[in-house]
Amino acid sequence: MKMTSAVGWVMTLVVLLGLPAGSCSQTERTTGSGDVAKTLKAAADALGMARWSGLGGGELPEIDVVNRVDFRATGSTYGSDEEPALTTEYHCALSYNPPAMRVEMTRTVGTVSQHTIQTVRENYAWNESELGGGLEPGRGTATPDMAALKQRLLQLWILPYGVVKASSAAGDKTKVSKENGNTVISFPLTGELSGITVRATLDDKNLIAKVETQADNRSLSRMDLETQYSNYADLGEAPTEVLFPAHIVQKQGGHKVMDIQVKSVDISPYLVFPVPPNVRKEALRQSAVNK
Image (cartoon, rainbow, N blue to C red):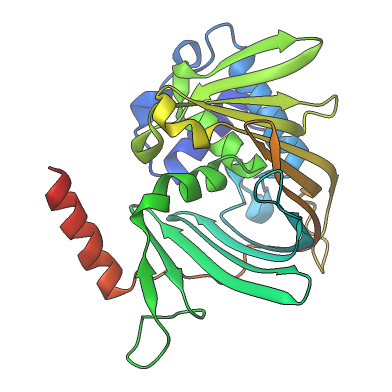
């Protein structure tokens, strides 16, 4: 069975994400010189995202197998330069269809601990007092936090899998260049993250080693991040051949904000991200006020 082409895989990915096919309709439009589709295919292959099958005697299209991910890590998060590092237990559950992420952290300094659950789904952002808080009467609370919407969505799309998906979706706006001997993928984000440009640097194995983001609007300078990914491995309890970075370091304005070691990864777990009713109401209210 022959493998599908790089452009064919990118087209399949766009369809799976529910994005307009016109944004990736032909080789010339998608790749320009032809390098973009090949580079994205190489990055997807390096991560183990792209799979194909000839089971049943017929060849199936190559597809992206990563939609939901759950990973756990330990390490440190940081406030200002003057504040001590916080020992952090980090648990992240995420989905790309629909785009959603739930980050549960327990941060400790000395004998004082703080537990938070920060959630985002599409156009909604909120904080939970406990997992599933606010969905049923008497089961915790959900506090709308729409001001955090962009920051939380950004974290979803700058993870390695998100970079491959978003750069594929950007179509002819995605560019590939060589800088200091390294391949760099550049593309704009859209929707709620419109106005933010992503630059992803690949290592010699086509794995995403560094992701930089920059906002056009200086009022969104908090969106200017640099995230370094290293020590990729198959971290699943059962082998999946999907790689995940075991070490993640993130900086904002040159200041380190997170340094974590990933301990375990579950690819395609059962995850749901229902939006609590009061969060929907608050989002609608704020939308009406801002019109």
